[in-house]
Image (cartoon, rainbow, N blue to C red; front, top):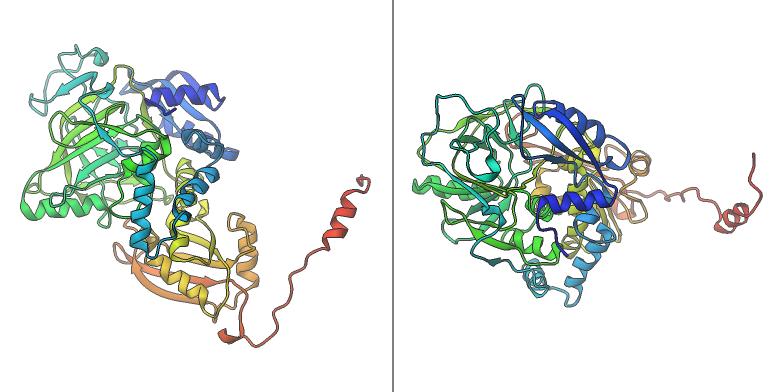
Amino acid sequence: MSYESFRDWVEALDRAGELLRIPHPVATELEITEIADREMKKPDGGKALLFEKPTVRGVVSPFPVAINTLGSWKRMALSMEAASVDAVAADLGGLMKARPPASLKEALRLLSLGLDLRHAKPKTVKSGPCKEVIHRFDVPAHRTEPWPAAPDWRQGTDPHPPTLADLPILKCWPLDGGRFVTLPCVVTQDPDTGARNLGMYRIQVYDERTTGVHWQLQKVAARHGRRYYETGQRMPVAIFLGGDPMFPFAATAPLPDGLDEFLLAGYLRKKAVELVKCETNDLEVPANADVVIEGYVDPTEPLRMEGPFGDHTGYYTLPEPYPVFHVTAITHRRDAVYPATIVGIPPMEDFYIGAASVKLFLPIFQMNFPEIVDIALPAEGTFHNLVVVSIRKTYPMQAYKIMHGLWGMGQMMFSKYIVVVDAEVNVHDTREVLFHLFADTDPQRDTILTRGPADVLDHATSQLAVGGKMGFDATRKLPGEGFDRPWPPIIRMDPAVKERVSGLPKVG
């Protein structure tokens, strides 16, 4: 069974004892962030939160706000309706093992075919719950009369339909440039091939009808946008919120270019995604989404400063120019739940989302690099800053091969530090990794410095999107690596003694 709305997902969390309800009014300006941040910092990610009466400029919104719904390993597994994320990863890896691919291109073809065979291919339908209430914007973008105190948005009877200024969109941190949609699934389309992309790019609300759209220059949506800017044609964009929790997960997954995110979502939710055409453009969105915001980007319009924004790096991203998105329609369920997240100093909800992606796509890395045992992105590294990878080392300089290979794979190009350790090291135990990093390296011999693309969110680089990389070879050294001394054994107790002592009466 799949989740047919975000409310459906929230109710499942409630039944599982994974939800805390906040029944009293809480401001979308900063207060929700402070409560959510405290919860996310608890052991194992705390609980999911449902704010039943979020306020916007002091007025209670009819749409509750759900946050931290994917912020633990248990909730990630529940979202995939599985016993664990590891079980889902093993199943996904099994698709590739039936017929070992001869190349990465063939591997991706086989993965796509394997997902198709699981009845995951998306299909188009005529309508769906996301269109229960439809508001087109055929009125001027700005109006001067006061807003009603409590418009009945859910019935579609309000003479002044809701705009971005009225949805329960969060202002997360004190220095943020405004309110930000933090869990948006953004649909764009290649104007040449028609291939669609589902990505997640923060959306800053400028006013009732316009936003900034923060698609970084290396992202697929930015590539689509460049083609529209070259032709001068308006670029259709659709933003949806809610529906199945696998939608935001698929939007953030590091999928190889050309693999449909809705195909992955269908596989993970064990049911094909039903898509419906938007009201004011030809893009398709999930029929069971909670809220859909339709619009366009005009290539003839100047870019506009977006930010600051308190980001996953733990620092504010400073203002930079980005395209302006114009809203042409908002559609939603009558009982919609507004999904949100916050990012900032880790650990946060995004750690579990990112770590689950790494687990799921480890088989893809292993197809390119069969010596890889495991990969971890520690929370302290805020995703791309630090990657730890364990390998079965069989020849000299193999660790450096892995470093260069990972820097050449998708979003791994943003990784600032890569630490390579031996197969028996648990990459998810930061203390164990640090022990081997400090004990098994000679800084002069076992490090490499290079340069490459950097995350545009990285405030420490001297140039935007360009920065240094550093690799650490923390594996055992071989003679062919200029190491001519014997490598000592690590201290370990005899297993028989450990077992015998475990059977003795406890001391104290």
